[in-house]
Image (cartoon, rainbow, N blue to C red; front, side, top):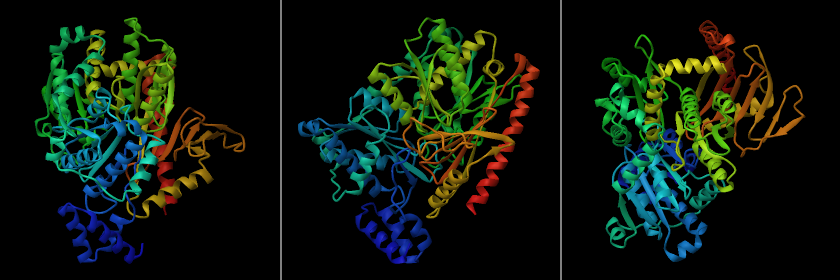
Amino acid sequence: MEKSEIIKRAQAYIAEEKDARFKSEVESLLAKEDFAELEDRFYQSLEFGTGGLRGIMGGGTNRMNPLMIHRATQGLANYVRKAFPEKAEAGTLSAIVAYDSRKNSDVFAEATALIFAANGIKAYLFSALRPTPELSFAVRMLKADTGVVVTASHNPRIYNGYKAYWNDGAQVIPPHDALIIDEVNAVKEIKTISKEDALKRGMLELIDKEIDEQFWSMCKAQLFRPELIKESAKDVRIVYTPLHGTGAMHVEKVLGDLGLEVIAVPEQREPNGDFPTVEKPNPEEAPALKMAIALGEKEKADCVMATDPDADRFGSAFPDKDGKFILITGNQMGALLLDYILVSRKELNAMPKNPAAVRTIVTSPFVDYICKKYGVELFECLTGFKWIASVQSKMEKTNSHSYVFGFEESYGYKIEKEVFDKDGVSTSAMCAEMTLYWRSKGKSLLEHLDDMYKEYGFFEDKTIEKYFPGPTGGATMNNIMTKLRSEGLKTLAGKRVVQIRDIERSVSFDPQTPSVTQNVDLPKSNVLQFFLEDGTKVSARPSGTEPKIKFYINTVVPVENASDVALARAKDESHTLVEKITAEISKTLDAVAK
């Protein structure tokens, strides 16, 4: 980008930004003539991805700051008024706003609420930080027209974000997301109002316990065996960490009401946007659970649980026979939860008519086997919980199926129908009950997982991530995907690719006969999937919220005779296969990136 264009964009930002902290950052960079940093801050404007608006905090159009929040909210408000003209005319539009523990989240959330209020949309603002699933719950409970939660979920401390929700309680999907962006780009004037005036006019209302209490009740209502928990609660010790986020208030309340003993990691219990004890507050990554596992070992706990800063993701670890805690992956927990839900529904004669489960396309097919056993239809969708919610919404509108569970490999689970997003709070309660149930059957959760492997085969999963930050990152990732499309992957680890699914082109084909294609009934998305002759699936996908490309490896190896020896052999075979595929993909990535 030319220096003159960088300076022009920076000066325009300075003229519009009202917050002195963020404005001064850009002024300082201009004074120092740091054009490399300025280019990174202004080469693009943040756009909605799979997780909404998300970026590094700081001054600039490619950063999260009050001006970008103002523009996004004004554009969203303009779109909501156009989408519901009768309610706009009657003055009955409403929005819910929540925020997490990250730096500036409270500032961004209040600014969002006041812009809604200034545009004739009554804003219900949580009085303090709250989890993302509670925002979704509140949108549905209060019948709001839209909602926003200020969070960057599990991203590093330098990030913040803005997730926009529609009136069904789910994150916005097409056509709304693109149309909102059009409105954001067309914003000429940003309306706002003081907090005092908004409160006085009844256009701003603070909410808290009236939503909290109903949210807690909803989470507890999902359980199948509350009497089992009451009988056995004292036999289970749970170590829990909210990773400096919003989860402690809700997880401790829900599990405590059930009579369960919850030992919080003291250094990580209080909200703190610096996340001082972890590099990334992400329960998907082992280092984030290091302190919780150490406490679990000290306390001889039966389970370690973790939620990310906005408490929509859930991570866990369980002790093996030697007392060593084993981390449970997102795919494993999803399979365990679905299995428990279906076992329970069958035992209690509570299986609904036409039951259905949902998983994303990059999630392990482990659950497909479980669904087949119980006669449950399995639906696939794009990555991101807004797509899982969209499938559930279609089920409800058409009355075609009864939703029983949805999840994605990145530690997101949706047990309930009342929340249209992943929920770490309700998952913690269900996980506790599931642990007690299998204990009552003489099994630990890890032992039951091995039993499932013996029945269905051993499933192993791995994710490869490669970052491409800066102005050229997007082009590099596009180049990688273009070369994968044109050259493809014919073999991996000595296994032939028998099917390629290109979600962007909506086609599926055998690379031996590429001219013969089948349609793929999914919204277009920049995803490539390679299916190997042994049942292995490898997916390539640029992230929608971070400058990285991700490869997802899903393998399955049969376990002959369902024996311990055969299971050990299958695990060894799978580990070897995954490492070979990882090495080949890494080599390909490095070559294309150059």
